[in-house]
Length: 462
Image (cartoon, rainbow, N blue to C red; front, side, top):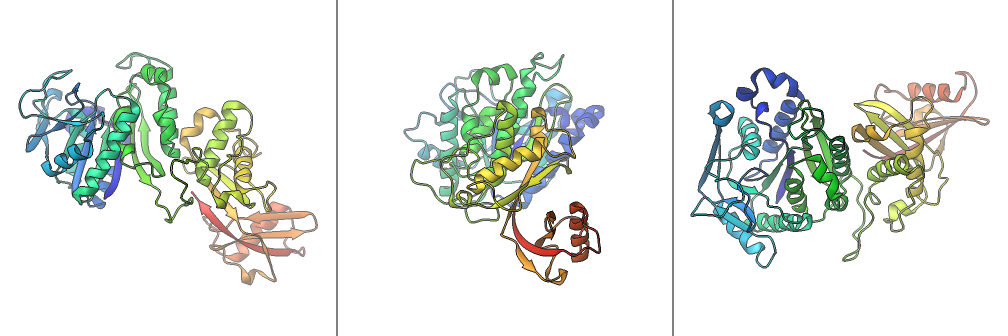
């Protein structure tokens, strides 16, 4: 019963009593932490799992706090009066131990008896967990759970541990939230805490992009040299969190990202895409069979298509394995926005490719680099772009604008070889008359010229 997954940074300076005058430099992160915390509270979890890089690092496996009440404060950062705590759910811990029986990576309780540590002694809660807990407790969340510290196992072992964690949560039978704590590259600018490396920004952009697109396999296979050069501490936390999705499709809403001090602070919510839910739903595939990343979701496919083109200078090959909905021909528009403003929009009124996947691939590239209203998209912009795909039903002829509904139907106007199209449900367009007038202007058709009118329904993915 996994309710919500949050990805958070953990700089102590975003705690008001610690950051003080520096707080204004990280106001986006502060606002995003508050927003994510409210979302987690609204999800009403009864258990909270916090994954951190900065607790005790055990050779034996994943360190799990075993004391009944695990507490911490920000005394080492000048604010001893700011305290946080997390009660340990021992039944959940026991269930997790059962679920990992025979696995290469197992939970190892600490805080009771002596444990061989790689780094320090865990007398109090680390700031990797304390920072997100501060915001959650400020938002009103106070539930038991588990404090986990990752170890330096392989990416796939960490992911498999996350799968076991999900099984334990489901067996426990209580709705749970997972918060994966970690900072991205520590090498973004000269003078950064770990020194400067230009690959730090490259890593942050790529990881954000892969998270947005739900490309877990690509995250698992990130170039080890790139990860090392970035000097980060988030990937292993995030991999355990992604493992709790157990292979289910997902997307990630990046609420904020900034790096004013040379360290990348990302705040995000990972959202599972439930089959049969509001977004695109691909049919179930056979056991062990996987579609290529981005091949089953129109939005992910559009994003992947433009990125591939910007990286390789050629169109993305149409995936060989496609869900039925993408294997049939259909017209489509791809829209791109940056910070809420249109960045490109190109589409087709009738299908020109043999399937919808090919239509999306073609139009995503055109929207990104061939819309004459905008400069071509640059590769470094990709992490800031939001994509939408409108799949058009075949147009049907109508006698007048009385048959239109600007919220429900798009409109196509034709006069000879001239034609203009307008999608439905556009901000500021409230009447059919406005809709037709704008479509006329787009086609260069005068207000008194005779036209043929067509309406069409749209399935929008965004």
